[in-house]
Amino acid sequence: AVSVLVSAYTLVAISIDRYVAIMWPLKPRMSKKQAKLLILAVWLVALTVSSPIAFVSQLLQPNERYKKCNQFICQEYWPSAHQ
Image (cartoon, rainbow, N blue to C red; front, side, top):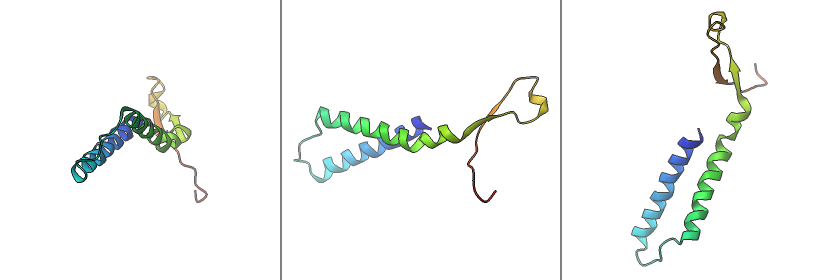
């Protein structure tokens, strides 16, 4: 999930950079420090948004026939008060 979010947020960051470059062509470009901070922010947001998955994922054995193959399914289980 993290890699998908990083890809999406990186595309958003590139789009914003291109928008700024078109709207204000005389404005100085992004510095290396700003670019590094933007990359760090993209990764932190992606990790933060996807972190709940690590806490709600469980390994389940779907039924008896899979015990011979030792296969498991990683599934999200979101506890709810209405269950």
